[in-house]
Length: 79
Image (cartoon, rainbow, N blue to C red):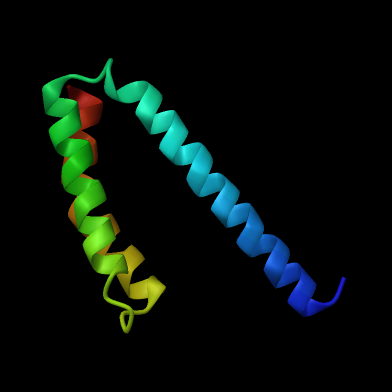
């Protein structure tokens, strides 16, 4: 496979995984506690806002998300 075909296949896999993620979260929302939903929404909305800043590199977004989400993830693990 040439490089362009590999990249196109990876793009397809990413789109498919996004769809699976949305379906999985839709199925879980009904059984999540309000506290868990609040923490999940905090992480998700922060990530989306960062992704909408097109000029920000993915590496920088991931570094920021690890730092910002760590506390919320620990709360969820302890709760």
